[in-house]
Image (cartoon, rainbow over all chains, first blue to last red; front, side):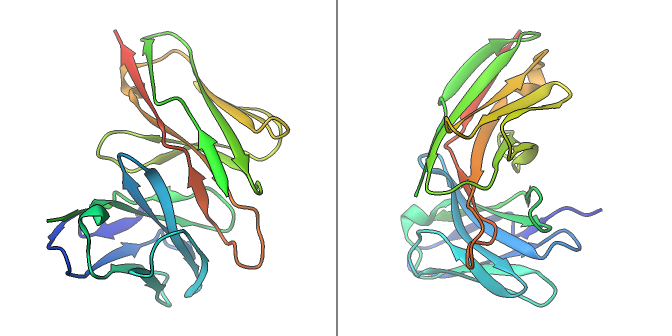
Length: 111
Length: 114
């Protein structure tokens, strides 16, 4: 079966712009989580959605937001981009309380 | 909050055994996961422990002691392809809002040498 699909794979944006990243979970998976990965901080939890509701949120500023659609696809948005937002953004989907499966990620570079 | 510690780097020889330790201090616990991540790739699931003891899966085993806040990942018969980052993650306990959230350590970069 198809894995978790994230688009785009690479993105370059300018400071102050906003960006939207997309994640399509594995079919049948209703939980979608987002993580930010940087060399200094490792993988950090952003938020998790289940059935179009945000169930949990990590310690990130309000510039980071997300949503989930009725087909479980999810988007995350970062507004007013800062240089420090440059990172690999990973999406993971899971079914119930089982292990999470990660997508290949979107590499965001802010210049 | 969650505090999860792992060694930053380890080196081992092809064919050998290596143990990667993970200690955690968390406000709650609902399972410990190990993931493998090759450079430029997505993390892939290796193992899951929720009860104390050893879980074995082929060349990989993972151990958990909840009372000590300690886990390790054991890799046997090391192969060159095992060179990767190994991530320890603790899952938040379930509550009305928790859902599914993994708290990761910063990862252990393992280099397997010939």
